[in-house]
Image (cartoon, rainbow, N blue to C red; front, side, top):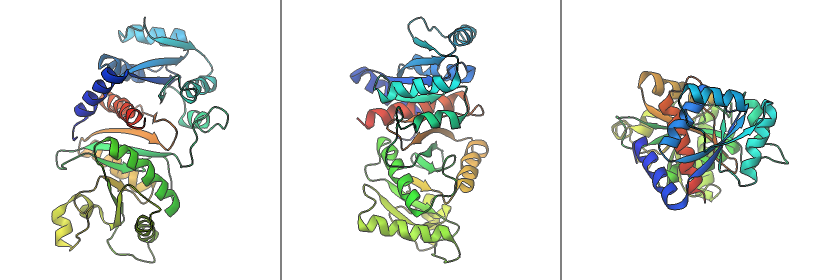
Length: 305
């Protein structure tokens, strides 16, 4: 797959065969979020459960002409409690996906990590952004651009494990992970290159499985076969990476926004590492990016069964 229309179509096919996934929207009284949910409903890829202030939700849906007569609304005016109720729906298997509405990210993540009702696993939570650009031959994942500030090698291992599930859902049976650094050689003064060396060894030792891990790679070597050939790099991920593992949040965030605003790339983003995918969209995200993110979460949820 290369286009998000294919993800939406695949999600629609799975919904037709297995029934649509339920998405619990926490503090749903947000116009942008409800517009995205409306589009997802129109595409027949999910069934929403709207948790939040019923009156405000109803008013907004009226303004955007979103027919919610057949949609469940759980009236909860307190934002923290709304997050807990939305997460509880997923942990009790009454819903499949959590989506953030009009609430701070820290509050919904606190509910996700709650030991009693939450969605904890053994892995760290990480953000994965999926991009489709005309100059690359397939989808690729940029991780982590929003959650993990300065991950060490073991945290990067967990980020890889999170992303592999997503990459396989996008069609890569054995995803190719390029560990991105500023240069291609290990330098003791550059921690990212040392991490890359350790991660490659982890994969060779079997501590990372289900994927190929290579690095350190500069960005050009990971996405351009020509650049890799010029530099004499012959790895399987060279010019054909499925996952770009960034050295830290600054690098990930800069690449994410450069692709979004300078390259006008189609994108989607979700949080991985919990028992269910989490959709955390930004107000700056386009309506299309929000719809893409919901579709991506539906795809991961279907693939994870």
